[in-house]
Each structure stands twice: as structure tokens, then as C-alpha cells.
Image (cartoon, rainbow, N blue to C red; front, side, top):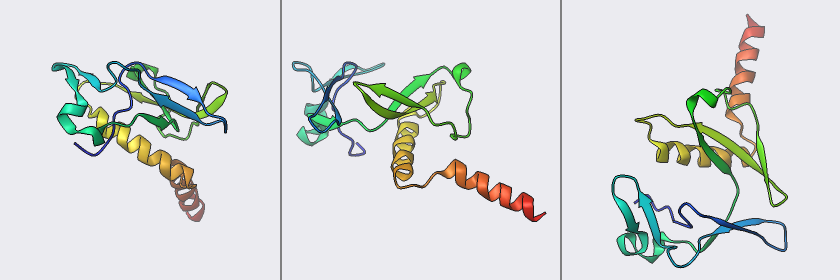
Length: 137
């Protein structure tokens, strides 16, 4: 409903193109289906139309949903990467707890990744502002 597109649900096939970029795609049959907990299996194409699907998409960021107990870095200053098929990708770990709006959090993570790609790193900017203020006092 927000204009996002489904590439695959659960099983994502990955391939490396000739330029060294990593792409993901879903397998047929079943590429248009998605499981939604509590609702079951839905056909995304029939619900939202063909524009809600994307047959293939470049992989830029890995997001892992984890237990909050596994989280240590709360600032975002720790930079992790994951190597997939020889390609080094940024890797974000997001704690999962009941009541959190995961789709919104994942969307913010993706948007923040785009800012970081443009050289805007919010944790480092805040750190610099705090250090500058401390030096002035």
C-alpha cells in the first residue's frame, strides 16, 4: 500500500551479474505469493496489481531481525558488513519485540542507508556536535 514491490517471500535466490553486482529474485511458481502471519497466504499480484511486483532487484543492504538480547550497539556507529557471493554489503541488525512496527523500522533503515551512501552519517554527526559542545564548555 506504500508503493513497495515484492521480489520474493521467504526464499530469495541470489545471483552475481558480470559487473559484480548482487541481484535477488523469487522462484516460480509462487513468486507472487506472500505469507502474512494471522492471514495466511495472499496473492500480492491479485491484491495490488502487477506494479506491486518486481521480478529482480539489486541487493544493497542486509537487514537481520534479531532478539533484543543480541543487540549491543544502540548508536548505529558500529559498521557491520556481510559477504555474500564475494560482495561486501552493509548489514544492519534490528531487534524484534512485540508491538514494534517492523515495516516502518525497516523502511527507516533503508532510507538511512541511502543517506549514508551520500556521506550523511547521523551518529557521527551527533557525536561531533556533542564533542564540540563539550570543548566549548
